[in-house]
Length: 565
Image 1 (cartoon, rainbow, N blue to C red):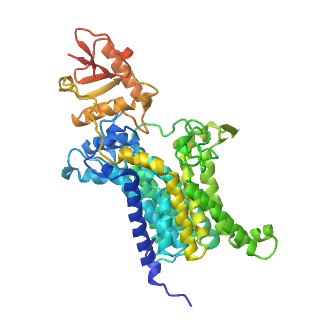
Image 2 (image 1 turned 60 degrees about the vertical axis):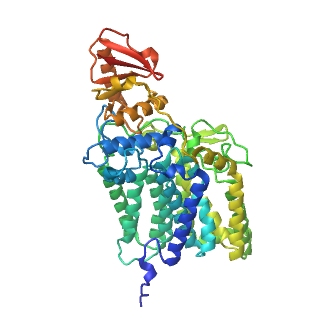
């Protein structure tokens, strides 16, 4: 006789009221954690000063949205006009968090001219990291005190703290935490059999609409889910259905926001350089109060995966607990360990596959330890090109980092309730002391509205931009990313005056086409055939054309520009 379905089997990720309360407490603690570290000033929608006073990737994300906001609606719906001479480009390539970009573009008529959602996104990420972290722990140990304390490790995850103020779209580790929760729920019987497919599909769609690096992270965790469903639940069709709908929803969402629009390349160089060092879990890069920084290579800041001293202590405690569990079993230690693995064989392989795939991808084919290259595995050009789509492979270390963190707290939860809570609380206290100075410096920087004065303040700009339709940067540089500040200064002006840009700092751009366009305009300007509706901006002073009767060259606010009379 079949067991009747209970009401708790019909509630998705939030299985019962306990999960909902755990999420709420974790989310509140996550938001408080953000405010303690960064303050509340940067959350204010009217405070754009911090984005321009401390220029970073977040400045690019904000300006990308400003251009997207000013662009007419199109289909695909995520296309932005005016950022390059190559035409429309998806807002995902300015990393403008398409999910929020679309929402606030719809609300644009109701919003003030000066508006930013980057700070709001940051605090929401901390809240969701803590909230879903609490739900994940609640699956392991349904105790609200334990899960509430443990959730702080997710909301104060060092790589997220490191990212959220400058490459803020990468703060959403809650996306693959949701995937981990779904792995715990692999046996769950839902009211509708298509619910698992819907949950995974929505998670994948959100990953696309936030940052594409989270897409492979979610699929990495999905591998563990597929192993559990196929080998533990014996439901091959369910695994295929979940994977198939997830791939389809991912591709559809990419298409709708314009990821495949235009001629820009998807492959970029640098795979193997922006990787994780084997010391990543212990290397604080100088951000720890107690642990000295370890050696690493240039670019491996992308693979920053420091767990924090408190979590390292928690891992050590968990390892001791694991040894104790094995020791209590009958027989020799190694035989007991094998027996424990055999007892949970499917779960063991599910965890191992997810951990090793994500860890190896993060480390890349250039395996390094401290300041030494241990091994560099040669890769065919085609394979390297495929991996270069996600060239900053070090970011994938966040998945194994959260796996280690969750596993450690899962083992600590085997202690008595009071002891487990005290142990996790003490570990987080150590964590806080360890990163206290770092967090204090962040609070001092972002905790108040900084003074900011726009660089292009000369009155002459008003005359130079009158009847100007485009800002052209000459001649195009291969290393154009080194001129981010120049791009940001002129992008502000161009957005305000509804002018287009010949190029911008983007994740995907047809550089060859942009370079050809810039060279053509450069040659025409030098030949005396420049355009009157263009403001020419030179990357370097020595690139400026000679002044003629028809072309006037100016030195204004530190920039060299030209205007045709």
